[in-house]
Length: 70
Image 1 (cartoon, rainbow, N blue to C red):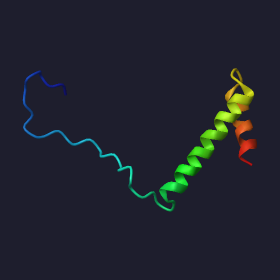
Image 2 (tube, helix red, strand yellow; image 1 turned 30 degrees about the horizontal axis):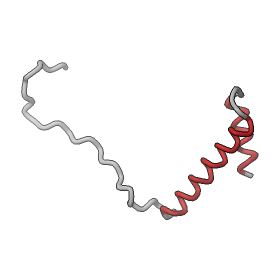
Image 3 (cartoon, rainbow, N blue to C red; image 1 turned 60 degrees about the vertical axis):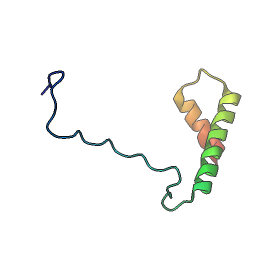
C-alpha cells in the first residue's frame, strides 16, 4: 500500500542488513589464503583473455580456463 508524501509512519523503518567487516574471519580459510587464491584466479582469467582475445563464446573461455586451472 503506497503512502502519501509527508505522512509520518508510526514505527521506524527496518534497518538494512549490515555488511561484513573486512577483517571478519572467513570460515575454514584465513584471509591471506583467500586473497592469494582470488589473485591467482583473476590472473589466470586475464592471461587467458589476453591469449584468446575477444569474440569467442562463453563456452570457449570456460574450457580454456578449466584447462589453465589444471
